[in-house]
Amino acid sequence: MAKKKKRRERRRNFEHRDWKKQHGAAFLIIPPSVLYSSSSRTLPVLIMGILDWAKKIKSSAIKQVIVVRSDLNLGKGKLAGQVAHASVAGYRKSKREQPEMAEKWEEEGEKKVVVKITGEKELMLLFQEMKDAGIPVSVIRDAGLTQIEPGTTTCFAAGPYLEAELDKYTKQLKLL
Image (cartoon, rainbow, N blue to C red; front, side, top):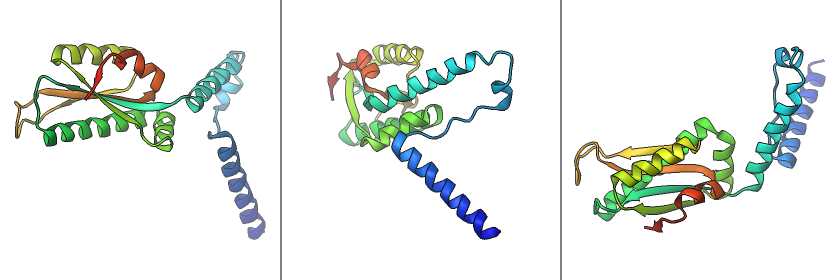
C-alpha cells in the first residue's frame, strides 16, 4: 500500500515538473469560495488576464536599469559599490513583488544597464514617475562614511522589469 502511494506521488511530481518545463509556469490555485461564488462569471476573465500577463512576461525581455547621479563625482570604487547596492535592492524588491519577473530575469542572464542623470532633482523625478507607473524601484542613500554626506541619494534601481517599459523612461539617458 505504501509503495503504491509513493509511486503515485513520484509520478505526480514528475508530471508537474514536466508540465512546468513545457509551459514555463506553475499551477494557478483558486480557492473554492471564488469558484462557487455568485460572481463566478468573472473567474474566466480573471484567469485569462493572469494568463495574458504570464504570456507577456514569457515573451518579453527583462532587464534592470540603475540610474546614477553624475554630479557627485564619486570615485570608481564608491560608484561601483552604490551600483551594486542598487542592483541587489532592486532585485530583492522585484522578487518580493513580482517573483515571476525576477525568476525570468535570472533565467535570461540578469541583464543590467547603468545610466547617468544630472542631479538629485532629476533623479527623484524619474524615480517617482517610474514608481507611479508600477515599476519596482529602489532608491539608495549613502551612509556617509567615506566620500559624501550621510543620507545623500546616489542612485536607484528600476526592475528587473519589462525592457520595453523601462526604455520608455530611460532610453534618453546616456550610459555611464
